[in-house]
Every structure is written in C-alpha cells, then in structure tokens.
Image (cartoon, rainbow, N blue to C red):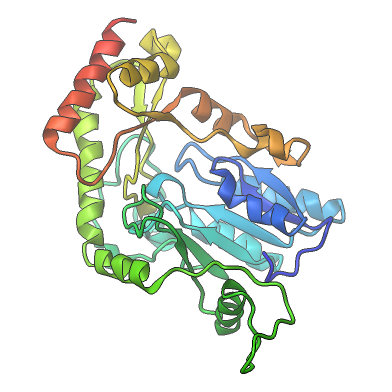
Length: 338
C-alpha cells in the first residue's frame, strides 16, 4: 500500500469475506477500503461484481488505487477475469494468498476445455497436474503469503512478499529493515518498519516447503473424510471446489442450512466446544465490522449468508484418523440432538 503512494481519500477495493489483516494496511496509509462481495462458486471476490463496482466508482470520479484480491481458505479466486478488469482500467492487482499456499489456478483456458461448466458441489472431473496451473499470488503486482502458526507451512509467524517488480521488492526490503540509508552510520530519510523475518525462521520455512505437497494432500484427505462422513446429513454442504483450480482445503469449511438441518451452525459449534473440539465460524464480512462502518460496499448478501451458516472444522495436516473420527462423532451427536 505504501508503494502505491496512497493518500487520504484514495480508495482500494477489497474482498469483504476475509480477515481484517487483508484490509488494515489500507487504513495504515489513511485510505478508504471499498468492499466487494464473494460468489457461491469459490467464496472469493465475484468478478462481475468487481467490474460493476469499478465502473460505479469511476462514475463517482473515484478511480480505485488498487484491488486487493483474497484467495480464501486455500482456494484460488477466479484470477483471469479479475486481472483483465484491473488491466482494462490500469488498476494494480494485489493478491492476498495468505491462506492459499499450495493452491493452483488453472485459468480461463482450462475452464473452456471443460465446456465452461462450473461445479458448486464437487471437484472438476478433469484431473490436471498442479504444474499445469499457476500459484495464486503470482499474477498481480505482488502476492502476500502468511507463515502464521495455523498455516500449511509455518515459521511460527511472519510471511512473504513476492513480486516480479524488482524495484518494489528492493523498496520493500528497505522499508522492512528500518529504512536505513546506505551509509557507514545510521542514516534515515524515510520512516521504516521492523518487518524482518529472522534467518532461523526463514530456514525453517524453506525446509518445510519441501513437504508442501504432502501437507496439501493431508488437508485434502481431511476434507474427503468429512465429506464421506456427512454425506447423509440434510442441510450440510461443503465449500465448493471451483473447477478453475485446485483447492488445498487449508480449512475444511461447511455450511449448515437451518431449515433443512433442523439445527444451526452455532449450536453445532458450541456442542463441539463442549467436547473440547475447536471449530470457528467463517470470517465475519468486513463490511459488517465496526472498524469499517461507513465504508462503501457492493453486494454483501452472499458473504453474510456464509458467515451466518458457515463453520470451519479441525483441519490440521497432522490429524490422525482417530482425531477425525472423534470430530465426526461429536458433530453427528450434536446434529442428532436437533
């Protein structure tokens, strides 16, 4: 956001279904976030709604300074149409891939090969190797990744900024290391930050990258286990895997339709909590957060519904089958009490 030289009154379009860390940097630079709803296909920013939002902001005389696209819960957003919209209006695209390391985006061309059909219930029947796609976070001006303790690859904290723009990376390194000017003494002409990752933590992360595919496979197995265990439960649906990519299933997310299920997400969550099993609601949309009250928003009904009905189940790469069985038994027990 600093690289884009944001000024008070500038606007940045952001996904509304995300964690606040995706949006806070806009406020750090005293600009204004503008929120765009997600779609049901991927739970990520809806490309058509983004195009409408940009056109509307332009008519208001407010050209967005950037679009922050979040790749949520291990699933790539539909990057091609979003990148095309950004390119059409010369708006930088920033990719928040904090939750999507190891995910793959196959793109519009691959979707055309599938006769343009989108699946909202299961993975595409077309099996493609990950190498045939691109990594979320590698398409826009820059990509942002997280190595927090709950991620597939972790250094206990910190993250990574990636870009093909060498000047941006050099400046980011400069700012991240207290903005020290080249001099034999400590000289500072700009305000910097202490955003460095230690060499030890970076080495831990590099070592874990060797087992990234194994971690992805483990997360996907968790999801498949839950899908098989809950297939007979009315009103329980899983986050779709859009056929334009491969989702890591970083977190296995479900929705519970109260009308069909006879219970709701919160009752199930509390029942799991009583069994010492942690499950969390899907992200509360940013346009509903008190800190962002009054910010412009486009759509919101999809994100609100997913928040109301969505639940993230235990999904760690190191879960044993006995752990998964325990979660399933507690879940079904709670469901049967409806």
